[in-house]
Length: 122
Image 1: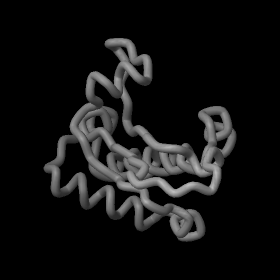
Image 2: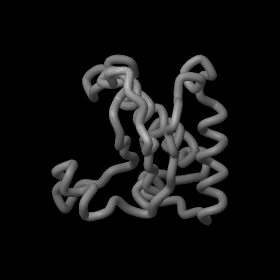
Image 3: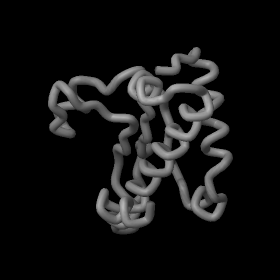
Image 4: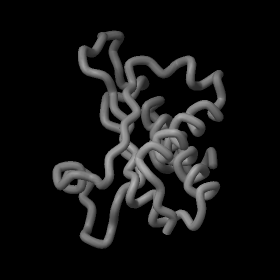
């Protein structure tokens, strides 16, 4: 487990976003990328998590592939969960890689990919 301050975690998020392909990032519109320590009870229930499961990240919104050309007032959200990401990381570089991978995974959901499609791309 590699624990960092909130400031370092946020810096790693920014570094990770900056390292993603610009060709994909340019299509992200109205998406907030947030940090939270742990998933809320509501997020856990909505994702049918057992007590021994957790989330590293979560996309909440309407994927681009499901939109009918309408505009949304509220932004889509990608939330990164700090404590679970720290718990699977043994050093800062591994934490940064786990953050980057989680952001990429959640952005793939934003574009409408399901878990099987994401695994195929990985």
